[in-house]
Image 1 (cartoon, rainbow, N blue to C red):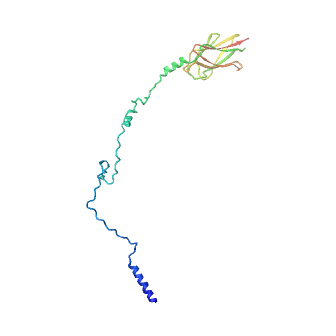
Image 2: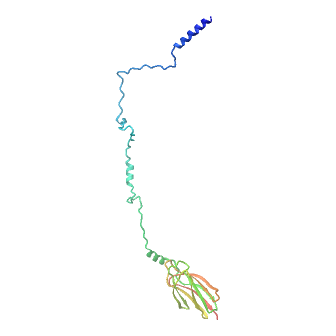
Image 3: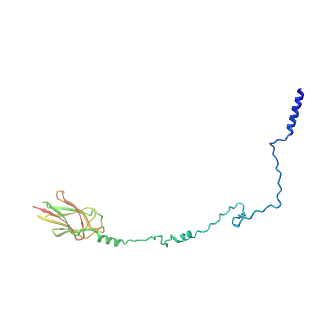
Length: 222
């Protein structure tokens, strides 16, 4: 019995080995082309692409029609200075001589004298110091005592200059006459009055028009 079983198993195995595997590739039979196959319609000329002579040459992008409006706009603007849309640079060369004359004429300087008060001092003399407290622009003065010129044509600088004035009994009227106005406007000065004991009697400043005076009075009782 065992022999018959072995024989049956052997026959079964041989039959299985003889069958082809389903996983093997199957060949598809070729189809013969039709003799009267329909032709495809030709592409319109606008869609036909021509192969470049050089296979590595990129196809050029088709040109777009020019925009006439943009073309006219670009031509209408001229940045060289000829266009009305561009303001030309105006060269201005000031005449400094005329400006200085104009500045001197238009300077708001009060016409008239300036009075700084009466002061009592019984010494024999006083010393008056004055200087230009603003820009040194050519201010000039003369000094008068009781209407008599004591110092003539003093050019004012930023440094104090002193003048010794002898006092007489009674009133001593001291005046500073503005001979001119400098380039910066009025005749300007700072002044100090010092007595023989180095005490300050008066300290002030003036701003005068040409021909005006700065005045103060020293009263000597003895």
